[in-house]
Image (cartoon, rainbow, N blue to C red):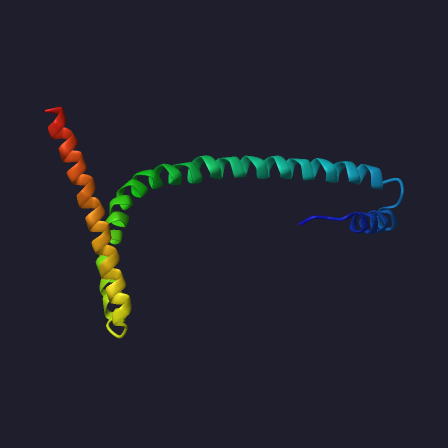
Length: 127
């Protein structure tokens, strides 16, 4: 909660009317000390919460994140065939898309085979 300038002026005028001009400085000083002590207490409480709750939770999360990483990889491995099956099922009604996907897969396999052959021939030349 923030107090703006206009609210502060209204509070000062009300305090002046209720307390009188002699007591306002005395009570303003007490209110300032009280607010500063509340701020110090709130800062200390925030620091204690951070030390006792937040930091230990972060330390506990680290091994859990490491344990979850392989599960994410497994999930990707499982979802890939499912996506391929869904694509195949959706391509049943459109034979042209199926021919294009088979052609692109065959081209990729041909490129990979050529790379392997080149690699093997270069190794044979070295031997």
